[in-house]
Each structure stands twice: as structure tokens, then as C-alpha cells.
Image (cartoon, rainbow, N blue to C red):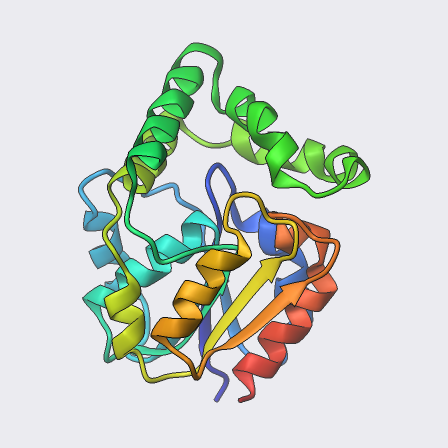
Length: 230
């Protein structure tokens, strides 16, 4: 029986961010790429999500999705078999993060989610060619994000707790995947997680920025396959 793998997208993203993984890994896992349509600020959606998942499952979260994955790990540690954090981190919210989230929400209110994505695009991708190639999808996903979902995403980013203790207690296979040129979740933050869980595997991808699933889909899928089969 194939393991269940829940794929959690990043801020203003949806299941389309994992198109390559859903094709490449369907032979080794029961893949469930999440959309955040039911997201709310209370966190009750996480309890509903847990009710819909089998007793044992694995998690792979990109960026903000990694923060949600860590929250699921805190809520149901005995149910999580494997954990993969892609261009993410386990740090608590900082003053800078709260200011950034508040600023993004103001832009979202005035101009819509796509304006937030346009403003952040220079730090999303390592190379201008990647920004040009993947920009339309990033904007389309942002445009499809309801305002209440965007607000809940920004609120969680601004209030998230410290997840390093949860990583310290986790005993399953842990995979960290990051881009060498990620300006949002840099190498120093990956090393923090590696110190909390030295048995983890860290894959740092050269010539890649923050949007690992789009900039290096094949290399990410290979790392996830090896992690699923560990």
C-alpha cells in the first residue's frame, strides 16, 4: 500500500505548484496536493484536515506550507511518518516577519493578491529568466487566492510559533530542500533545523532561489522520491 503524502503549497499558491511532483511521484505515493480554500484564521481547518487524512501520513510543505506542516506535526506527532520542508524554516515569527505580513496584507487589500506576488517576485527567483518563465503561473495562483485565504496566510506567517522543539522530537525521515540563492529562507536557517535534527538529509540546489518546485522540479521530485523510499 502506497503511503499518503500531503503536499502543502506556499503563500498565494495552490496545488498547481506541485504539478511535476504529482506526475513524477504517483507510482510511489498517494498524493494529495492541498488547496487552501477552507483556510481560516482560527486554525480549525487544520483539525478538519486531520480528520480527512488516514491514521498515518507524510507531509511535504513548500515555504508557508512547511510552516503549516510543522503545525500539523505539533498537533498529531504520532501520525506523521515523514516530513519534508522545501524552502521553509522552523523559526518563530519575528518583528520583521510581522511587519512584512502586515505590509503584504495592506497591498492585498488595496490592489489584490497578484500585486503582492508582483512585488515579491524579485526575491522569489534566482535568475530573471526564471522570473519571466514562471511569473504568469505565480500571478495566476495569486489571482485565484480569495482575500480571506490571503489574510489567514499572512496572519499565520506573522504569528507562527517556534517549531524547532517539534523537529527535535520528530523521529521519522526528515528532508530539507533549499535553493542555494534563496533570500527568504537562507542556508543559515536550514542549518538551524539540521542542528535540531542531525539525522535529517539536507539537499541544497545550486543556481536555485526560493521557488524550488518551479525552478528545479525534477531535482525536487528526485529528492522526494528518495525520501519516500528511505
